[in-house]
Image (cartoon, rainbow over all chains, first blue to last red; front, side):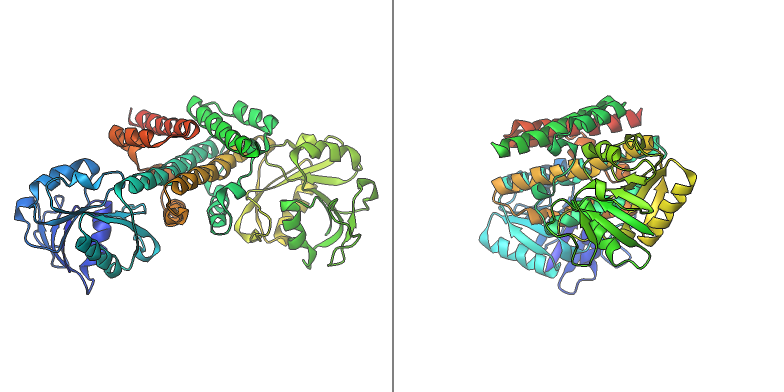
Length: 252
Length: 252
């Protein structure tokens, strides 16, 4: 399967590493604007300009959300072009007759190799036969897949923001709290890991504990008195009342 | 070391299991009001009434926050009494001359065995020699410990609420979102695990991604349009503006 990879950010680099020595994949061009080379160390042709694209079975866009429809306009309308964004409709690939989406339900960082066998891609294609090509690609990448249209994918992306971006921000706030009391943040790591490991056997609503669900007003007030920062205070109040609201309604 | 364990909730049961066959610990009485037996299957004496307590080196209170000072009043003022609560001052043990705290920085659920070697206790004692006893106990339990006074412990408990209770509630909200779009929640588990695994090598502020930190107003508005529920909408707005606020200030 001939692949052209467009983009060399966090996701683009993960794709590159996963594809470059893959026996079932021929990576024929890599659009990488930050490289000064015209060939990668593994011998893949590096180009900067979309006008230099040659024929491939799939063109994978691993670029920022805003660049998707811009790139679409510059790529042949005969090409099978797929984007990788969670919250962008397949229709953003307005120029192509053959369009698709290959959304990795995962977070990527620089210098962290992600195991492709451990997450799923949400996939979608405008034509039946192209869906088969995407499924074949996920097999070659040794990943799982789930079919979903753009509406479902956008809802899943929103859920991903809750569990990844928002959760990570709570970690940052907790880290700052620890720092301001001369406590090492890593004291909390076993607790954080257990909170997540529990999800394998308990539903999150079954695992909910703490002063909010207990309606322990005394502890809640103590916590509010401890918080100096108005932004953290608002987070505390919002999540406390959200928890109380959810479980209050459940009891009715 | 002679121990009396008071309480048979989630934490009380974990302590019981960890102590009952421990060669260095003699569990002499277990105050367990829900049991109908007067001896546990392992032969430990079970009592219901604090008046029946006999002499021990440490009395461990694994009871609800509200019951701590009530229990203290009923236990001899000569006893070395420790409580296990994150947000309760050592002074709540008002009746004892020898008081202490043994706060497990972990979350406990029914039917889930927790590895004691993988978390720390925050410990505190009113007398130096009792601190040595608590340290010895943590060695017997094969756990780590960190000394902290009640103020620090209360701040750590607040941080624990952020990373455990609030994070878990975000998981619940994400699960509900998935359910309402006929998507399996377990699609998000690899993402959740990676979000946490990253903390071993990256600071959470270095790992922050998503529409809020990118100030991607287009995606934020799409998400807000997707959210029907006003409680979730408030969570989304609060955390999005908290993230924007934190990183905005950082740039100044």
